[in-house]
Image 1: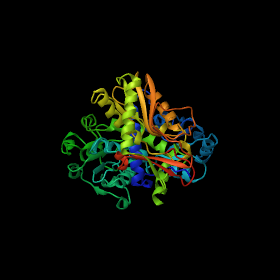
Image 2: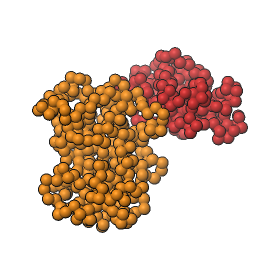
Image 3: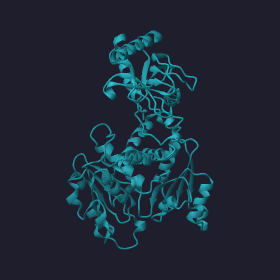
Image 4: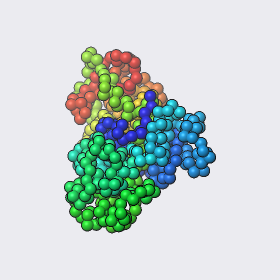
Length: 326
Length: 193
């Protein structure tokens, strides 16, 4: 029975810690002369991208290649999708080509879930971002970055993020990164606070495992990590805030606000950054900003996910659970 | 992971035996390498790592060079040939000493030598890390039943076993006591230890 990674909410604490620990070991590979492992030799990973992306696609590609899998990149532009092919027919084509895993990014929320549960393909499905729904590997790499930076001890192996206070600031409404992070970080024991203009707080947020605030200054002084979200201009089809300058002043992170953060606190950004909008250049280029580190950690996390889903005869994440239930 | 040994498990080596055996292996390493100048000890997790550290301490005593014998660990999980027969496993730590292994004499250290498949995987893993002058193998127990043309250079104890028997090594660092137990397997002979 194959398992998929569709939503960060599907991961138990033990699953999440196993992925982080595996990534921690795989991250050490970067220091070696040969940065490649033979583990997924002969397996095929398809990157199925219906939406533009640089870092996520490259990151998944690098991760699969470092595990010796064969990688097929499929982007909607220049493929039969632009001729009107449906998701189902695309999936059946991939199945016929023997894909062991499909990494899918889609503009429609729920597309990866449909792909995983429809029976069109047998391989594992990994959600690389669907609409405004979820982006679980981004949440995992964010949690990994926090654990490395904030954990007591060498790298925090085996630990979760219990008691850590994380603030997620900005366009929560359109952010799949925020949604996945809220689920994963609360699973790992962190206290999450969302800060956004009321117009950019999603409907139904009361049921999320987090606090909501409209005042960044009130929160910034007692937080271990501040995660700035990109203002997604391409999804801004209504007037969510009066002007960009007002948004930057109330919800942007500048040097003054950063100075009021606790000494050990870090600034995170999933990228791509709008400098001058949600984050000033001064903050983006400071030592406390982990944006570049997050990209490097992304490869390790995606290697861990691919290894745990594909490396054995069944998903290790599922197996860990059956052992527990015995 | 280890097959559960039954109540009838019989101890074949006790703490003083293990201590003597490791001292002898250390002397053998020094003798064959004519000193231990370029020796690097790499233990295979979990128990091989503890054995490698104990061997290093003895080598330092014998050669009179405290803190000069590099010790590390080599996780072979990603190189196993039976990965697809079971769920993917958690990884253990690979720690290569700072000076690397190029041109050195690498002594792999493991607790039990059985099918030889672990050592095959370890040799593949070593190839991705560097090019040692030579690779040797030290094991606490050789229980036979090789499935590959591999042999150990230093053996603590040769233990002829049947495939229905299990060999379990316990070390203080992991199990709270030092011993080697010989037991009977309940079901199929699947695991190497």
